[in-house]
Image (cartoon, rainbow, N blue to C red; front, side, top):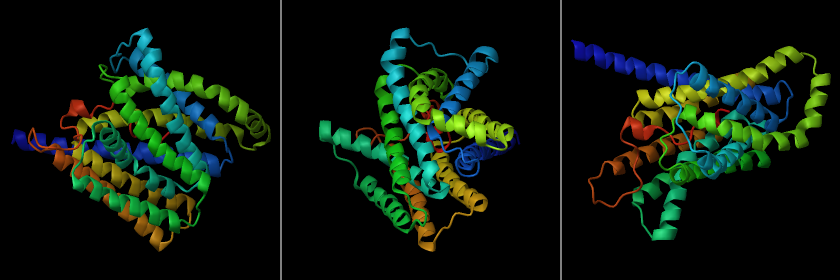
Length: 344
């Protein structure tokens, strides 16, 4: 009886974890699009800077004031030698995500961003093939075909296609992948969770982005502040999106501890479908039938890719295989937050 109740509670906890992660993620993405489209605040660098500031304050409150998470101590030398380069890539990743939202619909952006796990794996495969001439299972390459094909179909049939937004989203995927790969070497020896990651990286990212944001968007922001009619409600929405972006990091930490690797992968792909549906209901951006098919093919391909990676990770020692999917909860803890680019 106790085992049954424990099993039921585990399922309920996993479901609640996934639902709150979906809620924060979709809300942040939709709010960012609302800021750019409905509030006419067309300044992605400034929005990203606001998010970094809110995340830095939030991480400080959680670790230093509320003490909900222990601080992982990093040597001062490592902060500049390891954390700063990661913060630079992290900053580029978030900015590209917001730039893509500025120019393309949420549905198109989310479809492209779902390619991120595959680009991470592809970069790992390419680097290992280039350096060590290591070959990989044919199923990995086969699983990439529906992903690439789905994105191509979605891009060709996208009625609101914008080259700048498309390139920003695509390079954002590459930046996320590069961030993940760099973390494995630069942050070696530090077991970061998502909150400590934000605690160290957000201040650096703010410092990196503040000057470009002021130079490139400062005049436009001041003009918007003087001409916008509903200033207080609009500023409330902008800063609320920053607070929710930080909450998204906390929700990712919870969902990683409450689900398995396979569940996390499937839930991530379903989250894209939820974001596409919600954004269409709010913004009513036109979606053709073939565009929807392309999005569906991409999501199925991403799920299949994650499944193949999981299968190969279960092969016995000594069997040639690709870099494996994490098996335990501790291994699931990200060195950097792989899901933040959908969100902030």
